[in-house]
Length: 296
Image 1: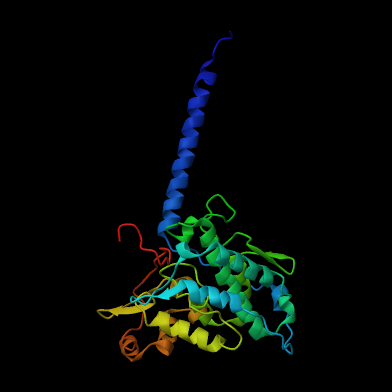
Image 2: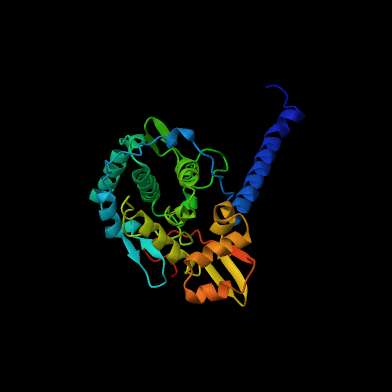
């Protein structure tokens, strides 16, 4: 047997120490990203999806998604809609996958803008529900780390569906299609991230016909709920959505406050009239699950 040199003797210990240090660094970075607000992607147009036919009259059927939502979304006394992930039947899971399959096969570039907007909102929300169902039970959608990258957080960067030959992520749909094409801040009240802090997932599909009512209803419900905006002792506390995506709401505190006033009820509007800046923001990433959480 050959002599064991000092370098060979300590090599495994050095490697173990290096791995331990790397694990510790990863834990620190994870803790920081888990406790801090997400760095919001900017709205960067994907030109390929600007194609449309303004004169098209064809309609996309979202009836299957509408029935699915009516079966599993429930309104609660606290004003937060919840989804019964644990109650979804195998048959309805198959129906959801079939619906997404039909949307994937839809030549969306041949439709008009109104049909396209409803299509992208519904496909985003249906994909989000499917992602949660595929990993359920989970405490938060942020626990579904299927996005590429060592420190990836959540499912938003994962390619989930292919439309017209293009693989798409949830980030693509929200930040490269919906936000930059429609430039409507109410989009944030329509796309749902399966969290308590998020605007409600409504119990109906959005369509070209009901889109305006749908978007306005989402805005009013969120703005007038404490998780959207609340004035406490003269201090305005808002959802972190208004911080992450401030550019979509006027670009500064004054713009956000003006947006809130537009959808606020009379009591909140009177309180907003007395504030000129935002003091704090918050967000609850707990899953919007209709099932009671452990310990509650």
